[in-house]
Image (tube, chains in turn red, orange):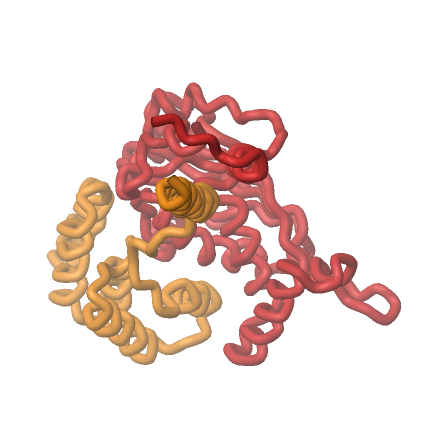
Length: 227
Length: 125
């Protein structure tokens, strides 16, 4: 039996379908994941980030915030405090020097599949006339320690001023959450903002972000969900 | 006829709603129970908290994780083991590093390297 749906219902269905298809698609250039997919690292060694900001807290603030997004994306993350101690015991105290250690040597000591190199561009609070802004910006790359190939690179920023122009919305929620957290935990604002930066930088499923690791149920399913 | 049509429309709507909800919402259940583990790591780096205090806080995260039925995150047991080591409790240092290895075999070669170093330093007082 053929059922004739009214035109309005057909139009509604069409509109809904368009929304679904278009809803999540962002028009930006796709990152080339060829090397990442070939390598499929399971474990990541986080190196102490190079801090190009004037705030001395940058390196360790960031280093202590990146385990969560990486681990929740399905990777084993080497314990950052022990890793830092190991470098120190080997006379390596400067992040610049550590970033220069040959990948072969890192692989030998830690047995990690890949290493994460972070460069902090902004960390801290700037006071401009009557207002202040806390911003943390960082760039990162993941390098395969077995081959020396760069598997992924990206950058992210988060700022306490994000809610100012948009008039609330999602960003307004962010800054309210930050203020609340600072008051409740007496952590410095830069550290809290660094947490948001690292989540944006290193969570899988972000546009052009890292791929899911083997401990995630989404591992090797990229492409499936976007079709 | 009208009944049939409504049935189809309702099914269609339900199907579309499910699709719409599932297509964008990739928010997933977290894999681990974190507590304030990352804040504890930062405090360690900044040399802010005493070892005993940190040990207690990490043990608390471990208990809470158990109560929540979730595993502890990568590095937690190793970090806790290191703190015990610094407090002079080498048996607990070893036990927690072994526990980290068991939970995450990815770290085996690194933690074996640390355990071996620990054995050596015990042999030469």
